[in-house]
Amino acid sequence: MAEAVLVAGGAGFIGSHVSKLLHMKGYHPVVVDNFVRGHRWAVKWGSFVEGDLADTQQLMRVIRHHRIRAVMHFAAYAYVGESVAEPSMYYLNNVAGTLSLLEAMRDAGAERLIFSSSCTTYGEPRETPITEDHPQVPISPYGRSKLMVEQVLRDYEDAYGLRHVNLRYFNASGADPEGELGEVHDPETHLIPVVLDVALGRRPHVAVFGTDWNTPDGTCIRDYIHVSDLAEAHVLALEHLLAGGGSRSYNLSNGEGFSVLQVIEETRKITGRTVRAIEEPRRQGDPAALVGSSERIRRELGWEPRHPGLEAIIGSAWEWHRGFHT
Ligand SMILES: NC(=O)c1ccc[n+]([C@@H]2O[C@H](COP(=O)([O-])OP(=O)(O)OC[C@H]3O[C@@H](n4cnc5c(N)ncnc54)[C@H](O)[C@@H]3O)[C@@H](O)[C@H]2O)c1
Picture 1 (tube, rainbow, N blue to C red):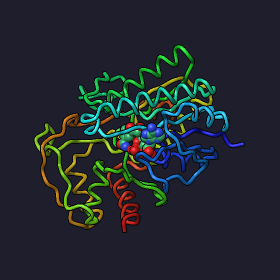
Picture 2 (tube, rainbow, N blue to C red; picture 1 turned 135 degrees about the vertical axis):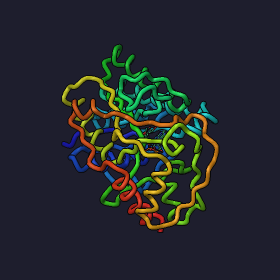
Picture 3 (cartoon, rainbow, N blue to C red; picture 1 turned 120 degrees about the horizontal axis):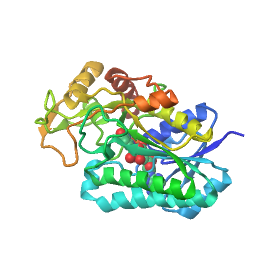
Picture 4 (cartoon, rainbow, N blue to C red; picture 1 turned 120 degrees about the vertical axis):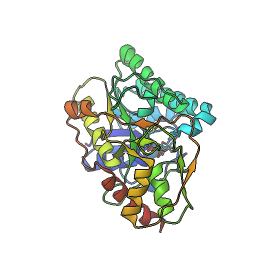
């Protein structure tokens, strides 16, 4: 029988891509999602249970019913700006919601967790590229909610033996190269889908938040990582834990940063469309540049990104985006 893996938040952008890869690799994804930010159309593989992280009893039943040994946890709110305005939403869903999931796992005997953490846990970088040993001093409630969960996981490991892998993603982007899935957040704040919306004429312009940062062209720099490469890393982390491996924290990044203006320029090139950009003030909670080193997961788990570079990322996102919206 295929190993069942609980995918909390599997109707979302990254969780749906991971569910597809789990299925392709012979696992049985069991998606739990309440659709607060995800999509019914994105759940195509394995089993599906509509439910909320806060419902500990339901999660216990699902874990027992499918004899789940390992959980992948994507379910969270994930907007820095929203977290500054509405911190209670973030601590309730991201922290209290995770505690509910952990209680269900503990009760039902699932002892392995892969957690979607974030580069936002590092805060303002003191050196670049950021390694896993960089101090974690987040500057937004969203980043703090992710760091709190990492701390809880450490305590749960010490006390209850919960083995876990924290995957600290940099900017997840791109789309399934086979065109079955892509990125649609609602509201959409992620740069690449916003820029593609402008290219398609679905929005009048893209806002560039701050042009006076201490970067070569004055706009923020981020490290974009293809969602299919993230998915591969999840399967490697799962295999590591199922083989008896211990807890780890890994960055998932390409080690190369691109500015907002570079992303816009590359999109103009790939789409051949006009992309109007307007300058707006900086947003609270945004560091100037975030570029990560993923040497550790390459060395320890043999992960290797197959779609590095802006062209592959924006190209796959464009293919999917224009098919979905036209
Ligand atoms: N997208 C990125 O660049 C990025 C970067 C770093 C970390 N992350 C983290 O990765 C994870 C996935 O991100 P994404 O971009 O796929 O987000 P997403 O919003 O597309 O997916 C999250 C999914 O979780 C579900 N969900 C949220 N709260 C829930 C709850 N209480 N009960 C059940 N389901 C719930 C949503 O409906 C959605 O389907 C998040 O935890 C996010 O913080 C994302």
